[in-house]
Image (cartoon, one colour):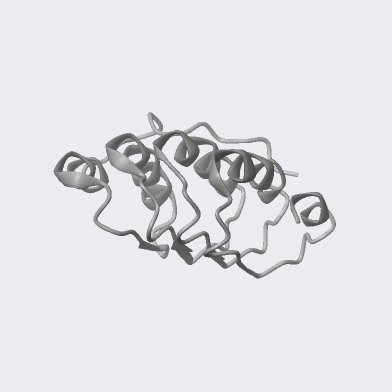
Length: 126
């Protein structure tokens, strides 16, 4: 799938929930997401993603300027992942983010504060 995304620059919606992507699958997918500049909806729910997967995902999604819905429910994003997601939320005010309660109280604090660019770095968009 991830190797096919490079040709899908006009992709608007991608639903890959419940596929047990895990860290390796997430890394492969994020390599190509930056090319999907028209992506509006991304469902990565229940894929075994952890805190270390959030930062590269956010970096790739920084190029998806049309993103309005991101579903990460059922993944363990944790407080550090929430900090990265806070940066994306600050950059994309129309973004709706769906998370489970896997961020904990510290993660909720991270989401509520202005985290600037500490959570991710902007990727070169193609």
